[in-house]
Image (tube, rainbow, N blue to C red; front, side, top):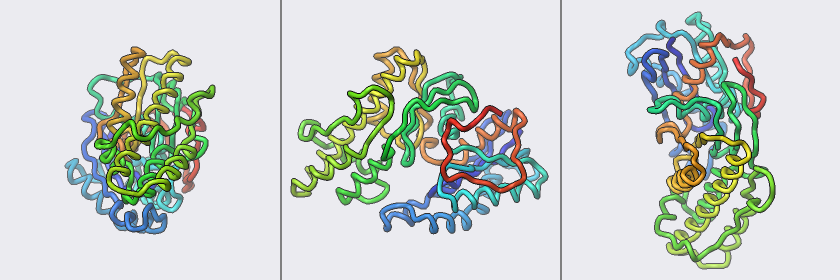
Length: 338
């Protein structure tokens, strides 16, 4: 079974082909980061227009790299949500039209289920459910109990800013540019960890929810009290990163002990951050839990994860209904098994 996967939820156009026998045949991504950088964030209308310009070209590139024709496809999977409504509609409309023309099934995929299963795309050691998952991105911060495909319980989530959003906002306060996460991570390497002791929100409260708006406000107030120079930028980035890592570690430790999980999957764009990886790997050693990350190329948005989930679900017979429908907001625990 060969499944074409298309990802257009935000500012990356991702197209990939996954084969049930040979694994990932191709994976191409076009990032709109340069286009949005001058605005300091993603402009939804521009994102949608650029998806329209690129999606057909990337499908051609993906089939060429896979050395197959469109007629060899057995199905088309696409991101149906959550995400920017206009961007989602571009991918959904293209995918359903292509599937109809090829007389193959189409299926809308939950974006966060794609991230959840991303470590399985090129796994060296098999990762089987059930497992505990931490999903961290620009739009989400979720702790999830993953029982089986489509059977998920959200144990905790951010009550305000997602962790990736907080990274971007701190970068903007410091005038670092967009996207901010990699820039904050780079500057934190040279920062003094003892200069600023930022709060660790909600670590002393029961439960598994997160909050990053108070930490962000504390960072803003700190910046306002000091002249902005290279040292301040590095030290703020160091202090902010350490606070985020501590919060994630505390919440994951609590979830591991409450659930009895022996596997922790960490995925989403923010899972590329090396400080976060190091902190959670240390947690895994302390709690005797296997910690699994996706390959770096699958941490950010991509078509490969959509193609893979499409293969898993369509292989069990799941198909789209005829109507064109996307969901800008779509809680993960509303999914169901195929």
